[in-house]
Length: 341
Image (cartoon, rainbow, N blue to C red; front, top):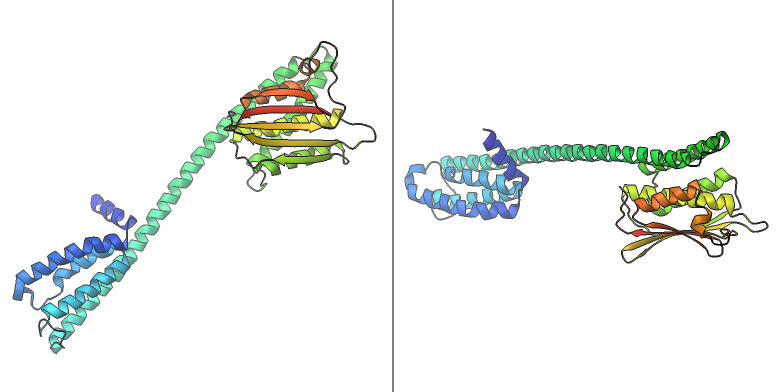
């Protein structure tokens, strides 16, 4: 019984009026030949051999194909098997009543089977939707586990970097406060990234929101941001890493790039070059001081912010670069596919 139910369900799932008629017409020919061979045996039941054909057609092709086959069967049966034979003459009262009942039975059968087919399709659609939702929940759960593990790894790395700066109780307190601030910022970014109502998974909107929030938090109302961010679709991990990179670079600009009598302008760009993406954050401040014999990286080698940015660039499969170009320029080039997990 279960096999029969499964077979009927598959027929209904793939219903097509073309398939129904293509299957029904050969069956109709066989039924017609069988009715001719039976001759007077079924004289009082001229349509009985066509009922299975109509049933099969409506199961395979749906209500439209079933009605078409029922109408065709009614016309052929009237012409060949209802007296006066081979004509559309009016039959006797008894034969006419039998013919009308047969027609009504075929129509009713088509209606019932079509309604049953719709019910089966609705059930199958609901089952498919439930399975798709369960699969989506499973994927989301695994992604959540993965993101939690990555975030804990980031916290561990951040605390390790902060610990490396501790040389005294005062330095330890400062390092912990700095790490706390960064963790608070990371928590805010994760809320934005995983809140479906925030609408900030769009990269330009996300980076613009980060810049505005940091400007408000720093009280630097005069600061202006210029964004040229391509609408790239990044994996969740890469999106988080890019957001944290911009967060660190903009925070440094707001802290260190101020010039008297000159409004701060910070330019954030993310552009594709072939199979690579280039992220740059540039300010119009005084730039990075370079003591003799030291590069920009070495000058600020003890900066926790730069170490964090270097680690994030590594997660993306890229490398952090610093330069003086009319201010401080932070650049990271990384594969467009993203390597952060």
